[in-house]
Every structure is written in structure tokens, then in C-alpha cells.
Length: 299
Length: 280
Image (cartoon, rainbow over all chains, first blue to last red; front, side):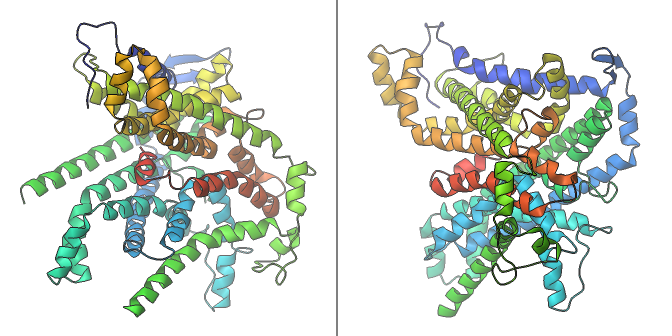
């Protein structure tokens, strides 16, 4: 980073440039965040104006003993782990397929990107229609080929699987784009040298491309995972969190509890539970990244 | 070698089919009449079912169905104004960070940048419930202004991050020359740096717009009626007389059409660094 020489001209500061951004963040992110923390320690009454009463740790005690909360923790983590790993594998496969130049490669690339730009609510309905057990095309195709129709959004495990499938359709493009760019960023001489030395395709991937791609891959997986923890739109449409509360994510539960049951204090506590989970996930990722880097320095 | 090429195309075509089939289903459903939907899946127009424009005309003219005009206008206005605000705020902040020496206590430029960018990690629900109460007190509930402010804040970390990257590619010699000519700092940003960063600004604005356009959770919590956006209108189709898939599909297509158009028209701007930033 290069700076203009400014000593002696102390009146010239970055403050005016930073002011609008900082003001927005303070008003609409940091203040609400602090307010949410306060809510988790309160009883809220909206009768005759907003009133907060200090309630100690009661919301938090309720949270850690609430089976519904732990179900949504489990759902959220399951969705993140399953979706992101499938998206990584598929994204990598697609990136490798398009790595070498190909006629019509550009068309495939654009087409493969499109799902990640679409409105999640529309994606939700699109898939809900596809999963529909009587009028949907999936079961019709299964029947046609002589298989048993599947209860995509009913039963114990299928609804969560269906949500993961939708998420994979929606977000594989993100991993694909980043991994393809990462692959293209590797100097071609390195690959050519390996080819001259007689390395096979698999060997080139395992010993040349993969190590050089690791930083990109880690960053891509980190970004996607942190975002995946926030999942709500598609679940809201496809299952509404049901059957029962079986497919509730943390965000969805916080919304239901906070605004539909109008228990704002406890809804805020559930949301804060999600916040802590995301912070923990970020810390785990950062320590993995650090270890990987150290591993590179001292093999 | 030839056989390998064929296998490669076959696999690519397979994934293309996976991407396209749901979209195909959405498009055809919007041209089906209620019977063609409820009698089980119909795949091919003119063979399986007779296409009709009934759903499209109903949602556009607002006959028997709520018209999409209001929410569409809200989505467009909120998208445009929140994008303008986010890009302006982000472009200014990124400029301050990349061209000045900042110290806030022990913190320097990199820390300020990280602080701004890391706000994006915050799950929206954490602030949304508190914002509901704040907006209730401030009279901003169900207002387009409220959504504009929230979306601008939500996109600000992304805009700052991307603009910071773009400024790095602007040669300092340009700015130094303008400085010697006696131009003020604001003037240099406006007349020299921003014009050179135009492609970056375009890409940033585009992404911010797509995010604002697609956003659901804040709109769900902060609007009910006047300020409802397209995703809220679509989500509200849930409970009335069962789901009218034909109308719903048409509405969904109207909603995704602009983002698909933007992606296709400006895909060259959607480079990987921009898309990577999109999840920051």
C-alpha cells in the first residue's frame, strides 16, 4: 500500500471518506448487534411502548436446555457440512472439465454460473414444485422407470436431503468459478514440465495442481461455509422448517420464535446462538488455514 | 484422445441438463393451465399440454391475482437506491483506506479494512430482530427508505472490499499529477480515480444490486404491505387457495429475469475476484 506523504499536513485525514460507511455500520449493524445482546438478557414488553426488563441469564438457560434449538443447530451444521463438501467435489470436477481449452467452453462456464445469481425464494419454489410428490416431475420419472416414488419433503431424513440437493444446485457455481480461476492461475510451465517428465493426468492433479490450488480452495470453502450457516430462504419455501421442526435452520427458528410467536427476547437469543456458532466455525477454519500454511513452510 | 473429448462433452452436457431442467420446468409451468399442472407432470408443450398465456396476463393486469406492479417497483427502487448508497459509501471508504495513513489507537489501515469487511460475516437475523424494534420506534417499518438503509449497510462491506481491490490497480502517478496541479482530494477521487475505476464500479454496483434484489429475510421482517419486494410477494403465495403454480412460476420468472439478464450481459465483469468478494 502506498501513501501520499502527509506529515505536517495533519488537517488532511481520511475521516471524511470513512464517515458515511462507518455511520451506516454503526447505526444498522453495530447498534442493532448491541441491542440484540441486550435483548438476550431481557424480558420484552411492547404494551405501552417498548420496555425491556432485565431477566438475567434466563433466556440463555432456556436456550441450552431447549431441544428445538439443538435440533436446528444439528440441522444447520448438517446442511453446511454436506452441502459444502458436495459443492466442493462437484465444483472441482466441473473446473477440471473446463480447465483445458474447449470449444463452447465459454457457454458452459456462463451457464454453470447462473444458479448462484438467482433469487433464492424463486429457487425454493422451483424445487418445491419439482419435489412435489403428486404433480412433480421427479416422482413421475421414477415411476416411469419402474422405481418407487420418494417422499421428498416428508418422512424423517428426506426433507433435509432435499434441502441439501437444492443448496448444491444453487451454490456449486461458487466453488466452480473460484476453483476454475485458481486452476487457470497456475503457471502452465509447471504443468508442461510435469507432462514432459511423464506424469499421468492423475499424478499431475495430485502432486502439481492440488498443492498449488490449496490456498484458493481453502478460501472458497471458508467463504461458502460461513454463508451456508445463514441458510433460510429455501427452507422457508420448501419445507417451512417441517415436518414439525425437523428441518428448521437457526435463522428460520429465530424468525419463527422472535416474530411469529413474538417472543423477541428468546428469538434474539437463538440468533445469538447462530452468531456464536459462526464465530466458532470461523476460528476453526482460520486455525486450519494457519496449520496448512505452516505445513507448507516446514514440510 | 477423441473418445476422451467425447466423454468430456458428455459430462459437461450432463451438468448443463441438471442446471437447466429446473429452469425449464419453471418456464413451462408458467404457460400451463391449472389442469395441466394438477393432473400430474406434463413435460412437452403442444404434445403434453396446450400452452396458455393466462397466468401471465393475470399477474400483469392484476385480474383475480394481485398485480406484480407494486412489489416490482419497490424491488427496483430499493435495489437502485441502496446500490447507489452502498457503492458511494464503499468507494469513499476504500479510497480513504487505500490512500491515507489511518491510526485509531493501535489499529491501522488493514485493521479498519478488516473491520468493515468482516461485518459481512454477521448473520442477518442477528441484527434483523433488533432492527424490527428500532424501525418500529423510528417509524421506518414497512418503508422503502428503511430497506434502502439496511440493504446499503448489508452491501457496504462487499463494496468497500471490491473498490479497495480496484484502487490498487490505479497508478498513483495519475493522482500525484493532479495533486501537483492543485486539485483537492475529493476532486481527485471524483475526476481522476473513479473514472479510471469505472469497470470496477460497474461490477461492484451490479453485485450490490443483485444482492439487494434477491434479499428476503430483512424484507420479510421489516415490510408488510407498502414496501413489499418481489421475493415477499412470491413467498406470500404460500397459503391462499393452495399454491397456484402457474401464476407463481410467472412471478418467479419476472423476478429472476433481471438477474439473468445482468449476468449474461455483463459476465465479463463478473470475474472470479468479484464473485469471490460476493461472499465476503
